[in-house]
Image 1: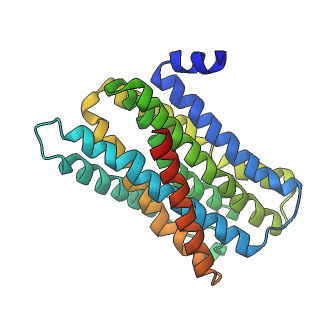
Image 2 (image 1 turned 90 degrees about the vertical axis):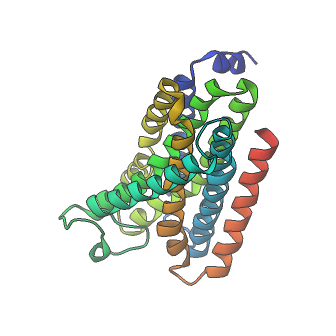
Length: 272
């Protein structure tokens, strides 16, 4: 109870930073599975990716887009405008990063790397891809906590905590999905774990940046919320869904996506 009260007494930026550290730690827990086994069944990995996609889709609407539209109803511009602009900008920004930064998607061979040609190692390219994935998640956490200052503090914090829990839930399999292929390629357990957890190290930083931006200017809140949503949807459609279907486990990945969506929806509605 004392820790709970101390957390609520912190500034939104500090709360966002701690939430980002939590999701980073959950990623590290998923990556730590390399110390227990050398390989995870492909169906299990595809199910994890599907679950992650479902959580992110649900979070994009329930925790980000819907609040952005609700906030905009009390502003002079049409309520749909900030959500639409922010959403498209989020996707466009991720697309630009996709084109400008060398990276390698899960399950891809080195000659399938995207972005500018480079001689970087496969592990580096893979971590960069997942880091791109994790930036919008960190921003989403940050703007959720930063938005507490603009509305009901109790309900706002509950919603931000629900989002943090949902992102943490999908970060566990994400850490596994990064570290296990590296281990299967012959990398040592320690190195595979290191790269697996490293992919989420950006989340606390992005969370602090998102919270600081929103607390500095309330005007950007609906745009920031929808920006994070657009970036997350881009990641799901461009990366998670294709990768979960790559080995033919389409039905399994789809079912797990729906389960992940349902879990995140329940968390957000029940807690937020």
